[in-house]
Structures are given as structure tokens and as C-alpha cells.
Length: 616
Image 1 (cartoon, rainbow, N blue to C red):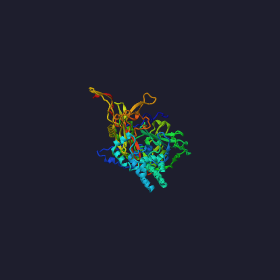
Image 2: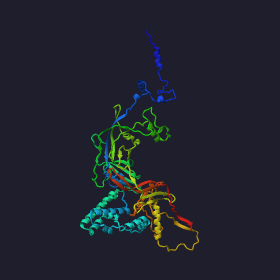
Image 3: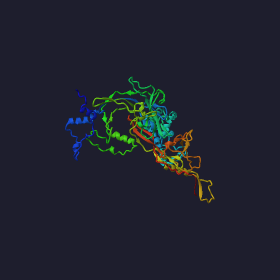
Image 4: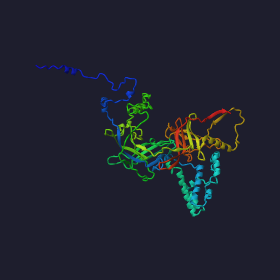
């Protein structure tokens, strides 16, 4: 007879299952007040240490290897076009820095510059010919007072400039008149009609050409008006540059459709330093990119695919970074644990997580790029200490990741997510900036309900900047002194103790801007330059005009000048012009006149009032 009843062990095994009901600490627990021995992390039994590593799961970790080798392949393309403010594109050959090409403007021919050019022309004449032609040129190109009455008054109100002009008259050739005559062709006619000999005529024309070349070497100025990148209505520079489109390089080596361009646009540049973050990028189809000034004149620069290069990646370190070895303490330069982040401080929490958790996951791979290059990483392979090779792909490369695509050095795309290409613009690391030769403060006057353009610094006739208020006061006093005595009849025989004032006035360096409607809109407004009457003269039609170039846009042609309202916030804006000097990578020293815009000084108060009753 066989006993088929289950055994006691089988019954107990089906009912009771082994389980862990308590947790045991796996780190050392010191039993003394001194931590010196515990912090030494003494290893007495290597096998015991390996078993502890297996116990805590270190051998099952992923991506635990250290990067020891990196292979990278990069596709680069160089800039070959430059266009200013919507004008046709001209070739960019990396002869000048991009800031110089964008900012440069015609150099004003003040008394100092005109005298400098005249003296240099005399030296060129002495080099080219042995005949003394100085007296002949002095008769034709001599310094003289301006013919306009207001210009003469401005000259006399500037005593140093007046004295300098008197000293130069009859002694020095006016280089400004000479340069204008050379550019217009009148100098060649003057030489042909002069009593010079044939050899002297040839030498004079050669000296004139050398003078133009010298002036272009000393001052960088645009050759044509189409190179002016300043947008007066926006108070900033607007430009674009482009390169031949690289496209996605495939196995067959194709690099995109012929005629396509990668356009980099900088439409809000005003702070003085042009860098990669100033540009927006867009891929333009053939016919949609920058239009060449002369079709076929700009040589193509096809993309270049580099040979795979191998580097040893260097770990990135930063102050306060947690140490990689667990038995070392941080240097406490940055205490991530003391960050007082709130529930809405997402950026701060992300930064703390990056420093604490992922601080040692970043490596630096050096790679040399040519200045003016647009680069795309086509392949990146990392080999770790275990010999495993990993292909690193760009984050956010798929269409579904457009909403979360972000990168520290990615370019903003005009019509889509950020672009992962890297742009190394041909810009200056540093330049020397002189004192402003002109400065205008744009301030809102809430009481007068208008915006004022206050010329705090105006261009002096000697080249340096003058105090705008002092120059306006001296000019007004000079005009008032030259007025004939008033012989009209005033209010007589009245015993009234009050008087009616139609309106007050402001200093002549205050130029008004009034609000007008945008064309076709009843709500949107823009600021239009206006004018204040000049009450010190007998001519009631005489109005005050700006003395600097910043506010004179279109004035000489009789055109109005508009500024978009959003360009003058409540804090106002300050726009200045100053000379700058820098050395480019080819050793050339550039000197140019550029503009800057910065935040203003707050609202202004002009004191302008209308229809007032005042004590007599």
C-alpha cells in the first residue's frame, strides 16, 4: 500500500514563500566619533570589495565606460555673399571683418580731415614731380567760409573751429574739395586746363589717384549707397550673408540642389558686437536667396567634407562640480544643495540637476574651423574603455521633437525649429572705440504727449563731439545778437497784470517727434520727425533743424523721417556714432565710423506748454 499524501515539507513550501522583511545597510557604520579611518576607504580584502560591488549592482550598470577616443566628421561651407538691408548681394572675400562691412558709413570731411588730406596731397605732389604746384592748387582748392548764413553762424559759434579755419585759409589745400573734385572728374578737367607741362599733368593725376587710395586705406567707408546697412526707422543695422547650401550629404556625395543658399540674417544688430547669436538661419531654394548685384560675379564655394579625425575627449569641468571619486569632498565653491528654488523655478532646478547628476557626462572635442564657416557634424563615434563604439546622433533630429528642440549654440530658424549647424562668423574679438562724435537721446515726454530727440552730443567742425546744449545756447545767442532792433509796436497803455503766451519753447538741440497713424490703420501709430519754430529770428517760417546726421535722415531731400513707436520704449533709447579701430586677421588695420543703440535714461520733461496765462 502506497502513501500518496503530500509530505510536510511540500505543504509548507506551497504555503510559505521566502521574503525579505527587513533592509540592511550596505555602507559602513562608524562606531566612533572620528571619521578619519572611514573616509580613508581602506581595502583589506579585494574579493570582499568585488563582492560588495556585485551586491550593489555596479557590474550590471550601463554606459559605465569612460570615453577614450572620439572620431568626428564635419561638413563645412564658407560664406561668399553679403547684402545690406535688402540691397543686392556683393562678394564677401574675408578681407574685412563683418562688423566693419556692416557698420561703416561715409566719413565726414571736417576741418581736421580736410587739412590732413590737403597736406598729404602736397607730399604726394613733391614725390611725383619736382615742380612746385602748391600755389596753383591753393588758388583752386582753398579753405573758405560757407556761403549759407546759418552755416556761417554755426561756424562762428564754435570759436576753436572758427580760429582753425582762419589759420588754414590761404595756407593749406582743402583736401575735402579736392577729393570731391577727383571723384566727380572735375580735377582732371582742372589739370587739363592748367598751365602745367605734360609731365606735371601726368604727375598731378597720379598724385590724385594716390590720394584717393590713401584715404581709402586710412578710413573704411562704403563705396556705394547700396552698402549702407543702417535702418533709420528701426534704429539698428539689418544685413544678411549666405553660403552655398550644403544639404544632407549622402553616400553618393550629393550636397543639395544647385543654386540653393543657406541665408543668415541679422535684422536686429545694434549693440556693437556681432556674433553667432545675432543671426537667424533659413535654407533658401534657388531663386529665393540673396540676389547678386551682378549675376555670375560671385564664385561658388561648394561644401567640403572633412576626413574623419580622431581625438581624445577631455572632460568638462566647472566650479563647484561634484568630484568623480566618492571619497572626496567638493570644494564648496558652488553649493547646489543650498539653492532656494521654488516650485516654478524650472530652469534653476534643471541647472541643479545638470550639475549634480549629469555634471561628469560632458566631454570636449577640439576641432579647428575656418573663420566664416557654417559647420554640420555628420558623424560622431565614441569609443569607451571597454572597446564599445557608440554612434552619437544629434538630439531632436526627428520631426516629432520639434517642440522640444533646443541647443546651447543652435541658430534660430526663421520658419521652424532651431538649426543644429554651428556658425563661426568672421567677426572681431575686440575693437577700440573712441568718444562719441554724435549722441541722441530719444525720450518720451508724457506731459507734452510726444517723443523728443535730444542731441546731447553734436558733430563738431573740427571732428570731435560738442556738447549739444552748450552749442545750441551759443548758436541761439549769436542769432539773437545779429537780429535788427525791433521797431514794431508792442502792447502799450495796458495795466493788465497777466499776459497770454501762445506757447513756450525748448533748446534748439531738442527735436520733436509726433505720433501719426500708420498708413491704412486707425490704431497703429509711428513717430514722425517735426520741427520747432526758431523764435529768435524775424522770419516766422524759420524752423530748427537737427545738426547731427542721426536725425537728419531724408531732410536734405525733403523727405519725412519716421521711427517705429516700439523702438522708443518707456525707458527711451540712446543712439551714438563713434570712430572704431581694429586689426583684422590678415593684419589690416581698419578705422570706421559706426553706430550704437542702448537703453535710455527714462522719460524726459521738456517743459513745453501751450495757451498759458502768466504774470506780466
